[in-house]
Image (cartoon, rainbow, N blue to C red):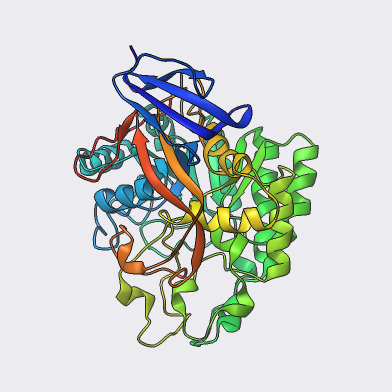
Length: 436
């Protein structure tokens, strides 16, 4: 007898969308049968026309705990993730204190997370100048790879690396390296201003193009695997495509804000829209969507990067002074679904971009897919439901979002973690380590 059967006329499985019954035992999917198949189960739930998706996998989340827990924390970030249909996150190594740049720091972060998480949580390690010798041990301890900045990260304890230091890191360990790709020599100091175009001009497209080329050169020389984080500029796409065609092991992601927000529509002083790299124009977003559709960009993740409202400087609206980061882990699915459907994409596309490919990126074979043997991380989703974003109904710690007041399509009804609903009452998320 199965523990649970979930039936839906819109199950998004590996072979596409179809009516099906999904059986769960001991937290794993044990069968995917026809919609009306008789299956003995302790609980049998018919979702009808609600879609049943695999839980999303968000490999780019800044939880910030310990050290800056007033910005965010494991309890609030993971509750927000579950409310948005995300069942696995991978936490970035910076903004917490200490940053995850050695094994001791990883243990401190794992201890801070223990018992607080409503979804499963893995961890990235970090590359900073001088820590190449610590990377093999940190990798053996279970981090999913290593993040490096090529420009100022915004926090002093996580300085950027130059091309030689990046090369040293790639040579130190056979691992996945994820790179914040902006070239410091192409960035300009933003002057104090309430005008978004002034901030945008300080981080031009050629900063990303040059840094992507630097990361690709390092990957090519070392034969290493490199992933470009939060690609915002379509100008870098030809460089990426050429490298892929030459066999360089490089992939790239983008984020909901780069695909759906338009620089021309950002009001003066609306610092909740500030992020680095910046939101660009609608024509640029069109090119990112095309690259996503043809597989050049492989996945969509949140880059959930919250802070306290004070650090967003809404009092002055000064883009230069405000912290750069967008908090969206709860909203990524409806934000992307709203725009994807308008552009003719289906739920299977969204699941591929936001669940399976991020899981594949970090080697989580049992996540991000609705298939026999996978973890029963599942989401009941109403693709036709709509809602208006109310920041005070979001679960992340500080209710600041550029999507406030937006009318979105797609409502998450229930999220299951290993076959049990996530209610917010009992944090059952596991701390994950790299599987291979």
